[in-house]
Length: 531
Image (cartoon, rainbow, N blue to C red; front, side, top):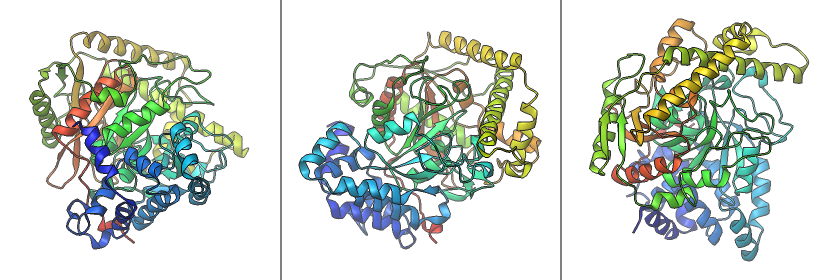
């Protein structure tokens, strides 16, 4: 029996009681030393905590659990762990209204709705960054945007709703996604569920914390320099950044950060990530970039197909010649061992890339993006931003960006495209690239905060992301796969990148690794996060 078939069969064996026991167990986290060891106390609770989104949808479709019960279970988990500080905008009543309408349907209407919307009734959270649902607040983690009510719904959010997901709030992000941690002046610090003194990574740290803590099996995330993959690595879950153009960014803008930023999800299982991408990918009116596909049919189906022997290039070093922490190298070596055991060929090889010019260009693009965000809010409020309304380092970046020229923007895109060509040629020799996700394990909270001198921030930030940003600038798909834990129980992932449009290859390998080195059953001790 395949991995996915096993998961589905296990889900079908659960009833309403087991599902609700899972929610209750999370709500009682302080009395359970570790959910990873909770089987003796409640087998149903353990199962309920690690169910994925597809399994939730199957239960709802069968009528074992109503959409309202599923929502209340998710809300209970959020409210049981306030010190995690992962969910910062709570649209509970709006979601309850939707859930009540769904729950009132009879069996025939429920089956019809689920046929059209495969994730019908499953609770879901958006990241509080550049995603909008009309009539709800999106702050972008910024004091200047506090209370900003959206006047429209983002195309991607509409696709989530069309897939049946019931959005009940938004997860924490640092201000404008400008740092690889999830800390902001507006909302404070989001802790790593595995170690409260350390970062979740960023900027999708709220989403990663929600999934790692078992609040939800899958949550929206976005990635402009590693912001899906770094939090996934730090929190011990799966995260894939799609190819440039795979998902819509509109309707107000067709690209984020000139194509560097992509939306998708972080998830407990690989199949949830593949399933959500199946349901949400595709061009929207105005799109001019659409990535090719490397699979026929769905990405979920592609996971089940035999994977040919892959030739994988390993980047043990990085282009900045920064030392890589031994714990990150241990994760890399475990990935090499697993891939070799699966029959793949692993070779150490790394092309030359103009990384200084690339990262300089990245600073220009993100700085101009910051200006655009600030100017949009200024227009809404009819006044200029005040220094106290931005994080100190974002205020400095905002002032600096005012001096950027059109030539600098053009040069940034030119060097991105040049690097992309180099990697396209490199991929003629290899099927995938394997690197560490970061050069250091999850750093302590405060190390990457935006309220410190620039010099100390820059030194810490480059250690956090010397690898991932390269694949944003070149538009290539990449993923973080859980692989290792440090002696402090901090997760560390391994990072794989593929040729443009080859998400199917990544999902296929990830499904192999998910069986070889399983992670979905692992849950942290959450007692410290209870009120």
